[in-house]
Image (cartoon, rainbow, N blue to C red; front, side, top):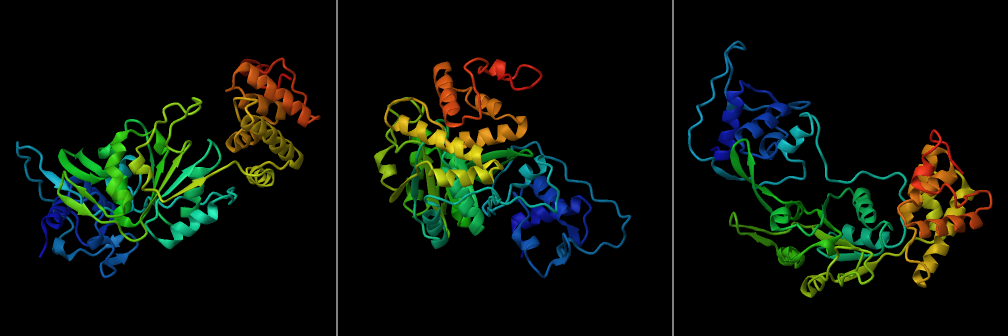
Length: 401
């Protein structure tokens, strides 16, 4: 006995003139037209008995076709009534069909939420701890804090890539609310359809939920309290209770410990609710990597010049020590060093690469950092002249120093 959603999909396939066997693209198109499913349903595409070829599925429910010249039946006229409200309950770890079509994906392509492996990644710091937590498939929330550009988010993503686990990354802002996180009603092809948010999708599929920059959020994040407790969440708009599947867990990254930023370096971060912070059993403090580890990172990033990577890491180490002692107000992150290596690969000039990547700092800081590098690396002559962004790009893209 077919249910209503199955009937809707089959009617859309018949209206399109489809006969068995049908292609995956036909199914995707019918899902969008009918609004019955957000993506190809498992009862049709994941039943091994139905698969008759690459991207082809047997669907005897459509009935036998006696002639290939039989015209497709005309679609039923659209009644002048309000669009029905439908609920998409069966979330799967793929991109929504409408999103897939908008991205130009074909029926044979499948978007996955497992992050790609980054060939230049160097595992260090808390990588093994995060891996043990994800591998355990326990619901064990983790708060990761540290200064910017030290690989907090990338670490979680690469653990998921290594273990082939789906990672639902959500970048938190002051405007992030319950609708963004848990889900809401969306207007699709004239129909009002419920779509699960990333939190609910991660819960249903046992994925890793990554709340990036969580300290930028507002009190709206308190809707996640039952989720962080591992008990599930009630979707009051559709009257559904969602229980997390095995493997679901939450990682949150932040530049602060949820207590705000007194020095003004991380504008927009706020003081997080203590009840929410208390639902993270452990906090991992991520420092910058050691000089030896950072050299490996720069080598993997494409720096073939061992002396250059050695000078860059030594330079960054001195600046960081000065920063921690309060002697300077700015710091050179690992991300900034990788940016310099990338710029060097593009422009072929160490001087220009360093100058361009330091242009974001104020004039006094930039000049102090440039002069320091000149002392670390005697082969590089960076004068105080021509270190502005305009001068660095002058002269037909040749290095002005």
